[in-house]
Length: 289
Picture 1 (spheres, rainbow, N blue to C red):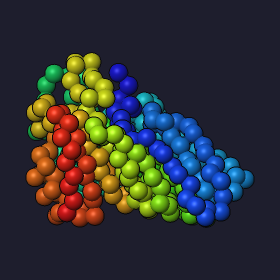
Picture 2 (cartoon, one colour):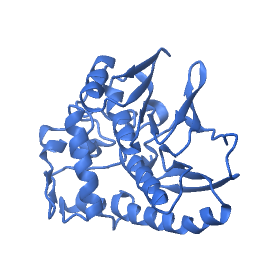
Picture 3 (tube, rainbow, N blue to C red):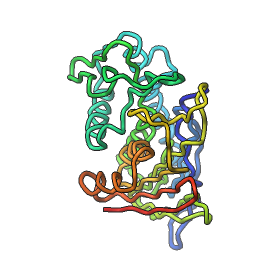
Picture 4 (cartoon, one colour):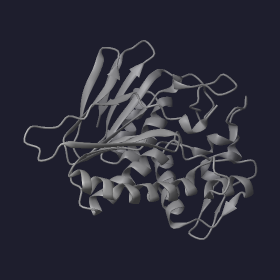
């Protein structure tokens, strides 16, 4: 089963051109980290086309760093040997992972890759807090594997958005596994039991996790609780935040947390977040700080 499809966004992008916009929309579609990707520009077509190659170069560098399906990637080397001297990009994301791991009370933990497809839980030795992080060396305990699939697409979405801003774009809907609006507002549709809920992205992002989107070979959800309890109460968890990376990671962690636990985390650490939960019995719960 393809772990790069771990993220299943239940968001349908329905970008709408606002009245008074200066340009028609120019759309580009591709694939990265196993996910469908797209860019919707409100900009001259030639300007948009000229920057696509530089976006693709950024994506290639990103996959060479974080794809667990590329034997020569940094993360593959780390999983083989247990240590690497990280690139600047790898160390940057590892630092964000460390922060979100602590802020989510350990529910965001990339070492769950260690038990992918297995029937046993993480051991205490395998958990993220045992990974050592320095600028010159990242090391992991024996029998530990990591995957950044629960945060990497959001991180890439943010990187692409920053890249486009530096190239002068002021109005783009970025989708590299998660959605982020530059400028805007952009409208996306969030699937809920009552139908599509319109979400407005105005220099903000949204990420969704759907635990039942796929199964491991052992029959369990593709989303693994680092604390070992396989009971999942939600059909989907969606998080809005100005950072697609943070939205991505929180939507992963919140799958295993109660509404009260989620509210405590966002009130303490991410007060500008908005969380949409759909429970197994199709109850819709909205949370903010």
